[in-house]
Length: 456
Ligand SMILES: *Cc1c(COP(=O)(O)O)cnc(C)c1O
Image 1 (cartoon, rainbow, N blue to C red):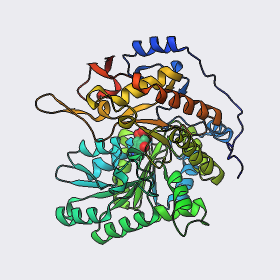
Image 2 (tube, rainbow, N blue to C red):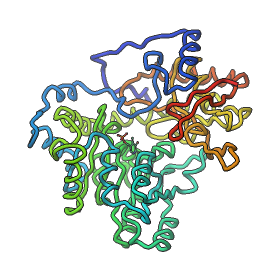
Image 3 (cartoon, rainbow, N blue to C red):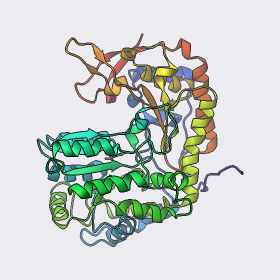
Image 4 (spheres, rainbow, N blue to C red):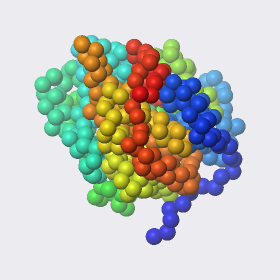
């Protein structure tokens, strides 16, 4: 088989600013050893997130120029609405400034104390929007999905039996909505199978519980269905996407992921009454229903991006480029979450740095060392992000210590990824010299964004 090449040519470029190790040492110290506080110009390859970091195509940029900025009835809105309807089949399409704005509207309308929302895994903004209403967000990931080293095709699946048991226990009337996150971002970007989506839908319909999709990575998930699920080998990506949405009553979407744009999102649904309420709230919080939280040009670029993301050559390259990085470092012995998902490679910092205990933040230590080694920025998903204190002030660690290397869409080439692999492997060789950290400052909430640390 020949090399899978980037299915694009580069027409417009951005410089990468190079730094020496000594400069990076200085930059890291100034940033309080927190990668979130490093200025982007001090980063050589930025794998902090795949959200809003995509490269737009020439046609999307043309759409930016062509966007209709009319307040009401913009032509760009109708193109956007048509495209989203064609893919999802939902009746009402409501544009928002990003995914969490769609979540805010949906859960404000359905949430409240005493209610339970259920999912394979709620993404953190989704969970926050649910909890903000006083309701509870409950995850039912399968055991497979919780086992990092296990190789299985659909580790994003929801545990149907556990979900059925929960519905019977709590009562369907207390569960306003069930949501499947495809792919499962917080669970390693692992896909959900069509069978699991269908069965979840059937269960929800039996109980009259609305079933929604968190659709941020719907195209990446569809590609996994095509390549891993029996019966879909010869199906087109569009038909898989349409089938996937046909089981649901609505979706929320962050266009910053699979719509290949830098900002945007939407809420889409079938329920006429709920859609009316959502539009009323949209007008108060985002904007008039034919632009929501966006400019006409953004709607144009999203519509174009939603068409481009379905290109099978693109998806083949996309999924393969993640797998390629995972394969390279895994062969060199680096412990990673298996198999690689749709948008990122996750390093297992606990196995990488067994000599650093969780309360000394092995994920942060690994992130910082990778930055020092080659100017590559990842993000810690471990004790700094999710650690808590018990009543006696002792650190309570989360189950996993991970470093996520999220790959922006259409931004980096194979040689950039080869470079990243070299940096990781070199860091792995020097692992026994890496030391832990302690916290010098932390905010009471979401401390990982602003914490200042000191090396031990
Ligand atoms: C990014 C993301 C969101 C939130 O979208 P924003 O555009 O960042 O507000 C919701 N769910 C998932 C799975 C995501 O990855």
